[in-house]
View 1 (cartoon, rainbow, N blue to C red):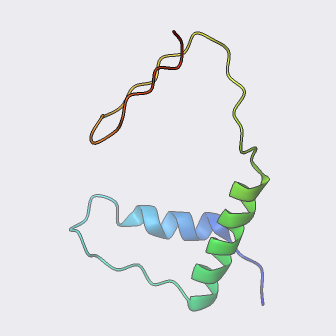
View 2: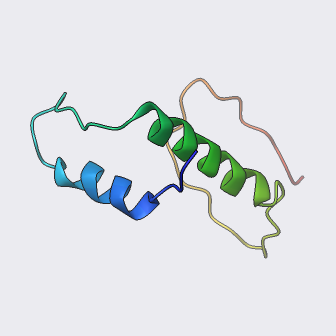
Length: 72
């Protein structure tokens, strides 16, 4: 296995931004697998728990979500 050039892959992916949907970017099997492995390593190195200071505002679309009363 060779070295992964993430910057080159990102540049090739960004070149098709704004193009018609479905436009293909030629990536080798090695590049796809190595990119997935690298992304996994980065995500796994991040903390699972975010330590945040109160108060915080959480915004987003609420669909089919039960509301939880976190404070009385």
